[in-house]
Image (cartoon, rainbow, N blue to C red; front, side, top):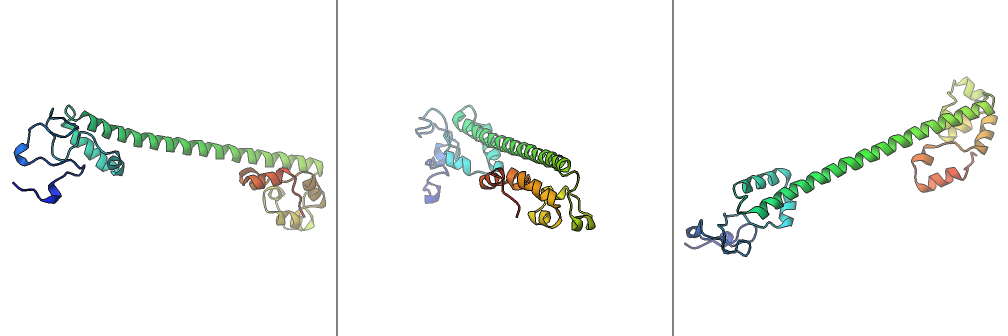
Length: 193
């Protein structure tokens, strides 16, 4: 029986045995004539091929090897190892996301604590005079002067609070969550004005 060129090799590059050789020992180097080689089921699988499979395709591949675990242990092990590798990647990704979330939550809590600490200190040192007439008339919450934009401070802060901010830089979000440059600027005592 003559073969068509597209049937000469299976998808893994092994030569396909003629139908008359079905059930006979496989001549490939992987089998060395010790066992039959099922059509399209290699004993050793190309790693790039395994990594190109979707999760469902990988599960199907494992099902294909379920019947040949004794004769194709290496291939079955490779498929199982690829499934484990992907599971490890997913677990590591979840663990990284969880660590990042905890770091953000911790930084957010530290920021809120610092804003509150600074507000208490400013209230004590300015004897509660934190808003100018315009801020009092607009019924501005003085705590927003510690977290809002500098333009808000310029518009509504009392001269006492502006002086206090000159000596004690505001704890801006950029100083906690921004780039290294913005954190350095905050720590260097960037002034309002």
